[in-house]
Image 1 (cartoon, rainbow, N blue to C red):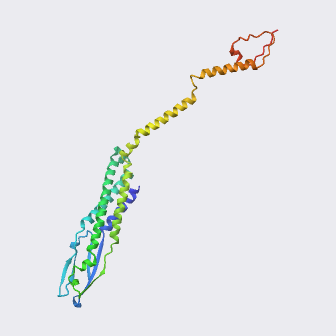
Image 2: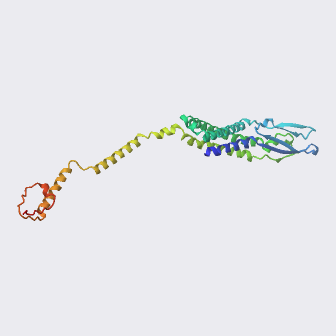
Length: 289
C-alpha cells in the first residue's frame, strides 16, 4: 500500500523539480568610461543544463563594442538520466497500482507477477541510487560553473582594476536541492519495498512451507513424549495390575471374614465356601421351619 500511494507522488516530485528548473544570473559592468557601462547583463540557463550553449553579451570598455561569452560545462547527461529514471518509475508505479487493484488474481498466478515485480523493484532501487548520487555531484558542479565570481572572471572588462563588476541577482537553488532530496527519498522507498515484494514471491513461501529438520525433529519428539505420557497415565500397568487387584480382593475378604460379625440361626455354615460369597459382605441365615 505504501508503494501504491507514495511511489508515484515522490517520482513526480523528483523529475518535476529538476526538469522544470529555470535560473537567472544577473551581473553589471561599470566601466571607467560611463558610456560603455552595462548594468544589466542577464544570464539565463535551465534544464538540461548545457551551459556551454548559454551565451551573453558584455562590454569591453576600451572600445565601442562588446563581446559574446559562453559559460563552461555540459551537465545534461546527469540531469536527463535523473529525470528519465523518475519518469519511468512513475509510469511503472502507476501500472503496478492498476495490477494490484484490478488484476490481483493474474498477478499471483504461476508466481510470475511477483517475480517480475521483485526484479524490477531491485533495478529501480539501483537506478535511483546511481542517478541520485550522480545528480547530487553534478548539481555542485553547476553551482560552481554559475558562481558569480567565476562568471565575472570570463568578462574581459572585469579583469581591469579601473572597472567595477558585481552580481546583482543570483540563481535560486532551493528547487534543485529539493530534487536531490526527493531522489534519495525514492531510493529509500523503492529499497524498502524490496522486502515486501519478496514476501509475495515463491522463494519466500517455499522457505516457510517446509520447516527445517531441527525444528521438525524437536516438534515430533515433543509430540511423542506427550502421547507417551498420556498413554501411561490412562492405561494401568499390565505387569502389576492383576497382582494388586488380587491382593486388594484378598485383604477385603480377610477383613470381612474376621471383622464383621455374622449371626447364624439353625444350620451351620461351612466356612469353606467360595471366597466370592464372602466378598459380598455379611449374610444372615434364618432357620426354615
